[in-house]
Structures are given as C-alpha cells and as structure tokens.
Amino acid sequence: MTSDGKPNLQRADVPLPTPRQLMFRLASLMLIAAGGATLLFLVQGPTIASSRLTHRIWNLGHIGLFGTLTALTLWVLKERLQPRNSWLVHAAVVSSVAVLGGAAEVLQTMFNREASWDDAWRNIVGAFLATTFFCPAKPLARRTRLALRALALTFLVVALFPLMRTSVDEYLRHQQYPVLSDFTTRFERDRWVPTYGSHARISDEMEKVTGRKALRLDLGRRLYAGVALSSPFGDFGAHEELHLHIFNAANASVDMVCRVNDLEHNNEWYDRFFQNFDLKPGWNDVVFSVDKMRQSPRDREMN
View 1 (cartoon, rainbow, N blue to C red):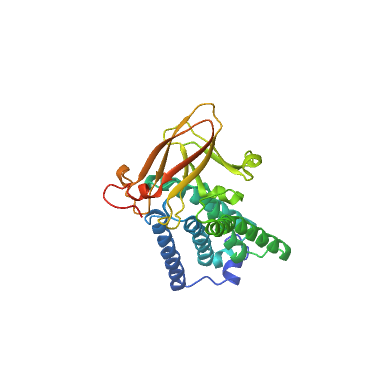
View 2 (cartoon, one colour):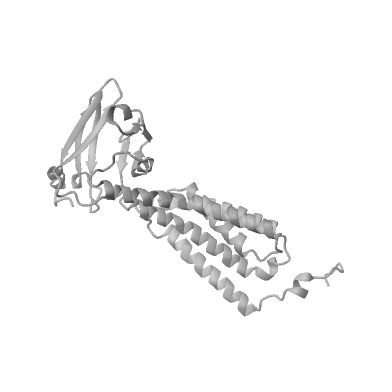
C-alpha cells in the first residue's frame, strides 16, 4: 500500500530487479553507449573518396545504434515501465531521442564534422522500431500494436531506400563502364555532387537533340562552384582520353576547370590533374589526355 492507501501495483505485481541485475543492465547500456559515442565523435567516417555504398551503409549505423540503446534502456527500466501507459512511453522515447539526436548533430560541428538532419531522422527510426517491438509498458490493443509496428517498418524501408537506390546505380555504373555517366536513369543524379551553391538535376531538355537525358547544372556564384563525380571508379589506365559533352546555355563563354585526383591524393594542388577550358555558347566537346592525367602529380604517377 502507498501512503495514500492505494495499492502499489508495481511492487506487489512486478518484482524489482536485484541490485546485481540492475548493475549488469546499466553496465551493458553504458558500454554500448560509450562505444556508440566513440564511433560518433572520434572515428572518422567515410570521406568524399569513399564509395557511395560505404556512405549509405555507414549512415544506417544510426538506426542500429539508437535502436539498440533504446531497447537496452527499456530493458533497464522494464519493471518500472510495466505499469505505465504505452502511449506515454512511446512519446517519451521518440521525443527524447529527437532532442538527444539533434544535440549530437550540433555537437559534431565542434569536431569538424557536418551535422545531418537525415542522421537525426534515422536516430528516431531506430528508437521507434525498438519501442514498438520491445515496449514493456501496458500492452495496447492488438490492432494498434500491429499498426504501430507496420508504421515503424515503413519508416525503416524509407530509411533503407537510399541504400537500395545506390546499389542499383552501382550495378548500372559497372554495366556502363567505361562511360562515366549517360543519364539514362534518374539514379545517376546521385553520382554527381553539386559544390559551393550549385544545383544539379536530371533534365530532359536535350533529349530531342541527343536522344537521351542530361545533367543540368546551375552554377553557384562562389569560387569553385561546380559539380563533382566523387565515387571512385575503376582503372582507366588502358584508355587514352576523357570526353565530356557539355551544352552551355549562356550567351557568353564560361571559364571552367577540370580536376581529377586518385585515392592517394594528398589534397595539395601539385598532386592532382587540373586544366582550364572554355565552354562556348552551345555544344562543347571537351577532351582531356589520360596520359597527361597520369603524369600530372609532381612527385609520382597518378593511379
């Protein structure tokens, strides 16, 4: 009985864990949390030179980490949560992870890491999956539980879609080799990363002329604005030239630079290939020598 005369259902019906059990649960939670924090703040994630699949798989770690932490937290508090309303537990978990995940993204900027609200979303997906499948609170109606689990799995599929999309495009890219990109599928847009305020999208404006779609690039106004084909490709040593087919919609020429580097690049200007070229109004066939690229680093041959 409590002090006001009401029955204490938690202590009467749900035995609390022993101190040893509680310490074991807390130790497990802290160990996983410490490992996750180490990965988040100290371990260098994929770089711009890493494959897109590596980036996608790395990003999914947010779902696994926060799902695991949420499930362990529910395990630690299992007996205390059993008398509680499930809706309150779901709301508390999702809101707490939203706040903590957002704070973690902001903190990453202090460690020279970029904040990503997509990562914050994946944190919530992991927590929501855990609480819908492992919530120890008073059970909801069966239909409600199934609906929540279906919603959580739907969120998981949405979070997995970039990985599936990239996997398909990686297969298509290998089929197209040695073509870098012919824009026959909209998935190819993901290969190209606009830089410094530029914007890129797959466009059908040139389809009547070329018979295929093209990548439309609206250049930003900042220095080095452009687009980067960042995911590593295979060995082009057996080929002689790089061909770019570019349409300049402006009425004046545009001074551009082609930069190429390999995975060994040390980020110094003398350790990469770069060459200026002018884009005249209309169509431009731009050609670069692969042998010149190979010899462009000052102290070595480019791979």
